[in-house]
Image 1: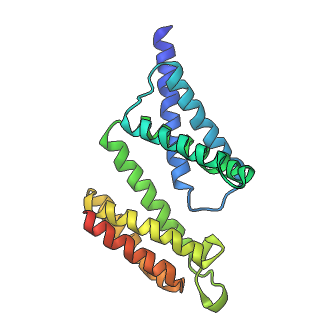
Image 2: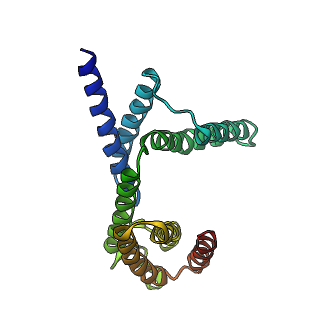
Image 3: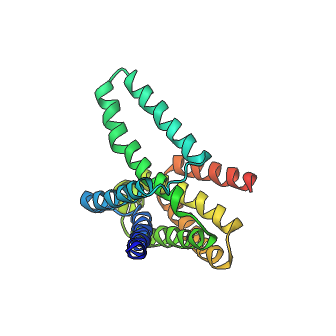
Length: 211
């Protein structure tokens, strides 16, 4: 009986890992909110199971993140508009919590980090490819993001991360990162967003200095 329970638990943990990867892959894409809600609920069950079975690892990163959440909550309570601040906390910070805490428990070996890198870069590359041909005012490329500035912000973050993965990742990750960076640079120019150009330059320079 104990072996069966352990097998079911490990199976649930494995499904939770793939649910996490699916959520990561879907980050750039505009999808119905119910899909995101189902994945977040699954990850919440994963955290609950880890706590119930006393397998939750409370390391320094988790403690720092929980302290950060407490500080954000305190700042919301002292905000000028408490209702609006609490809405932000419930919508964004709790969602961040339901992503960060499972991630802190799932990365147990380098293979998972390698797979996460592939999923991220594949998602970014697909989002850029699907964005070609979607132009708005002044022929600015806005892609699947609805606005060229929003698309530029996505490229800023994605390209900085891709650069870091290309510098420190294995050969497969480096090749995929290089492909995405080439497409991303071309797309960034077509967004006609000067703020995105400056932001990307700062991210690349900062990432290069850190490397």
